[in-house]
Amino acid sequence: MKIKYSAIFVLLAVFIILNPVFALSGDEAVANFKARMSSIGTLEGVISITYSSGNIQSGNFKYMAPGKIYVKFTNPAGKIIVSNGKKLWIYDTSSAICGVQELGGGGSGGIASFVNGYYAIATSRGSDTIIKLKSSGKTYSEVTLLVDSLFTMKNASFRDDKGNGFSISLSGLRVGENMHAGLFDFDVPSNAQLVKDPLNIR
Image 1 (cartoon, one colour):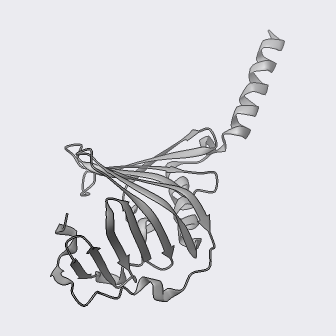
Image 2 (cartoon, helix red, strand yellow):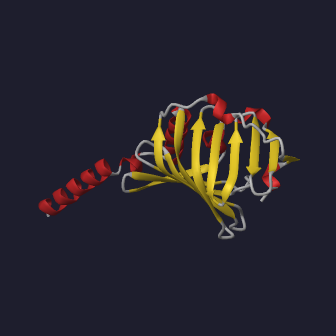
Image 3 (cartoon, helix red, strand yellow):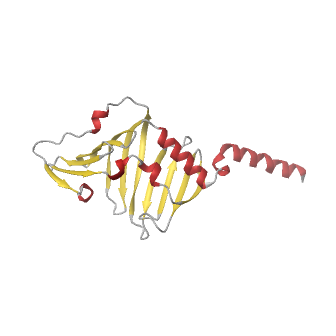
């Protein structure tokens, strides 16, 4: 019986070492995630957005703290989203429509601030961590984050009470790449039709 219990003890020790997230509470995992995402100066890679309707958008993105983003979509091609942290532009080359919106509060919080106010549970999946966030008082009552061993976001899904929403996947990530801040100030084409509320443009 001693051998059996010793073997179980060793297995548990190895399991905890290989999966340290089980030693973390949900709040601690969220804190690690927020600290990691807030510490990133620049980030670039491939982004894919999948909606509950089944529609998928994908392309390349560049991010610079605080709150600057540039996304050039390849599917569908011709759509560009740019933000300098204070203003948002959504431009569609096929229709020559450019939506422009002022961002309240500077738009610098990003997803690191979006996760505030949720009840969190953390589990592991190999070297990755899954953080499940729930709140009945939020637009998206359920948010699920998949982060790597450094707590960099790989995937995030957002669902409302009816199960509708979207998910964002990031891949091919490169941290700390040189970027020029001017990239995030969009130069609206002279022939573009300006429209307010770009989030309503499809």
